[in-house]
Length: 497
Image (cartoon, rainbow, N blue to C red; front, top):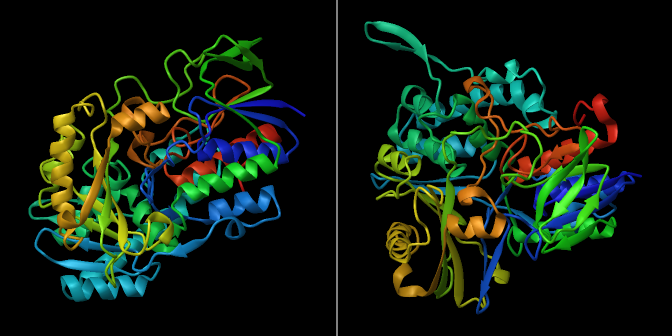
């Protein structure tokens, strides 16, 4: 039985902890905050309850596997999952609106044809077929296996882009999300739909490789799921599973250094001066300067800043109207200007806003009220001073004005608006600038890959969104499985079967 110290209590770290404990190891989690869950926060006021992290779950199979491998109760016995249908409603700048069914290719193509004109559905469907090819080519090495030392295969973009012929110029293939939208989808609204998927994950459509097509493919193929009580309830269930497996938690314990002895990780040092010996250390958070004794292949110096999330949590009077959609995306009229702002360290004048309106009694004091969450991808804290009260208020007003297109009588119904920015994310999670890591992508010479789960220092492993295979609930859960496999099986581990 090995002693294992886990740094951070995010979902990826807890997933690794539960699996390692089941394998017979003694696992203790050290968390700088006073609670678990990492980015899966919760805000409550006067009977209104909001998720402050992701509001939907994709690829629930990742957590089904976790619960199967760590106990008798299944995921569905621990949380209530409901498929969101329609999966999303989209409001475009020209006034067009379309609702996309959940996990129904035929339903999506039909809806696009009716809303955007004949042929729109076929173009999107053909795009998803190509995205499916990319998924089949890259799924295992990108998501289910440890990151190999030789990453040349993942440096190549798996998306089979269509050759685009241009007048008097050589044919080219789309290499970025934006080029896929312009050359293959052709309709600006379809391009905006694709851009919106990329931006919601913190990716710049103009630079992200075409392989980002895996993100809409994953959502539209495997569906979007809501966790009753909010996605924080999933973190509650994973934490409870850890406790049931005898994982120990120490809260309010900031780890300042990973100790090294004889060329391998040998424990951790805490801010209060205490030292803890360990046979293995699992880092489940973005490493702060000085935490690691060696460079571990993380984000290179000088790399572009990673966006964060701006949220407005609205407590509304009045019942949620019949037929209201759970998720609505209000698209910008000027994608280029928004992308310039987000990835250039400014606030956008016309941001893309995601509106979440769960029909869940647990989120509101009674059926005469409604809890609504507005989310925007924004530049991180630092390039933008998100502690500036005037700036926060101005941008919140902009976001609310845009969301009013999706929620009838929004301003008149508002009882209270809670504003959360990357500054709050940084304070609560320790992530630099309140940044939210994106999922790993193949292509672009490997520049969208994350740090390997096995670090260059023997005995030190990485889990969570800042490690392979990147950010997002599903990807964080996968990282926990990969770390557990590496610790338990050693060099022979080749990923889940």
